[in-house]
Image 1 (cartoon, rainbow over the protein chains, first blue to last red):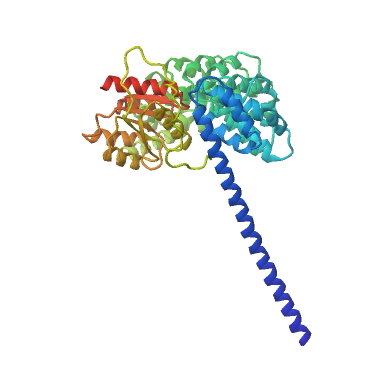
Image 2: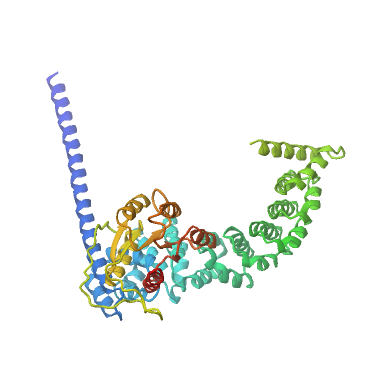
Length: 352
Length: 154
């Protein structure tokens, strides 16, 4: 009994010691983190103050001196440079480049292949702002890295105000393995209208079909209206996946002069392309599409009929009149049902 | 994220002249004119404040729309620099409040925004903004536009 009590006591004491130890570790760790944060913030303010004094001054000598003074603090310097690169445009950027080239470029190259993810992340953040022509292969490596590094690189590149960044991204996209092409989707999309020239040039090249599909999709998603003709050039492509994306992109671009292309795609041999073209015609809302949308209500494919119904609803009164006609006929029950459902939707919308 | 920095810690002792090339016509002297900067990004605020103070402007800053409106009512500035994407009420709403206030409506407002879509720019200009500058900022362009606008309005 005595032995048992002693064991319980020892167990209890050990438990108390472990708990206290854990608390102590947490407190010390927190104190260390706070100390580091304070030091980081103080250094950030110091670098920022010195950098601000340089802005508006001629030449980059001051920037080079600043780089030499703070080269020992690459994390802080990176933060300052990334924030200021995001905010500044024009001649003042030369100073940021000078600081980067002097204090961080060689370290940045080494960090790109570092085994530590934190270092690769830091390199990924920098690349968007301080990229140059020799970095195309580096971009490829980063976009093939682990998801978090890939995301950081993609964000940094897409936010980069540098005019150099866009052609480099396209070069990397065009030359990279097709398996990695999807990693570029977000990057290209984030470029928004800055991607226009790159996409136009890329669509003229003999790229892999998957890459062409991605580019066409992006034109529609951004959307870049000026590229409608470049997209329409693929309307006769032998693969239905490409034609389908053309139909979708043209619908999103909503250019009335693309109506003939969409009307052609609405008669495609593949029902998937027809369904998409019908949907896009509905988006365009052109009265010239009334006949083909009405015809599509009689398709054997549910998706084609559904998109035709939605398209006709988009047309307003003339579309509703067509739905009414089809709902009253008896030769095709499926078409009549779909049209009747469309009329119910129209009534519901009117009521609400 | 840069550490938050309140107030102005920038040394203005430099005798450097404005980075902005003067417009062809004479510009209004900046000294003493106050400018309100409504911008939530600390780095942008620091850059703008630095260049404005270098040219002799008195700068007030606010990190959100409500605070900006309050400051504008307390001390009507000569010009307002307004970000569109703000926490709380956005820049368009601030612009609308300014227009509805008879005392504040004449103050010229320059929009600073990373929104580059034509629709956003047109919406801001139609809502009464005097000019629209996209981010990232070129300090030279910003200063030139501010000076020209103040010269025109005076």
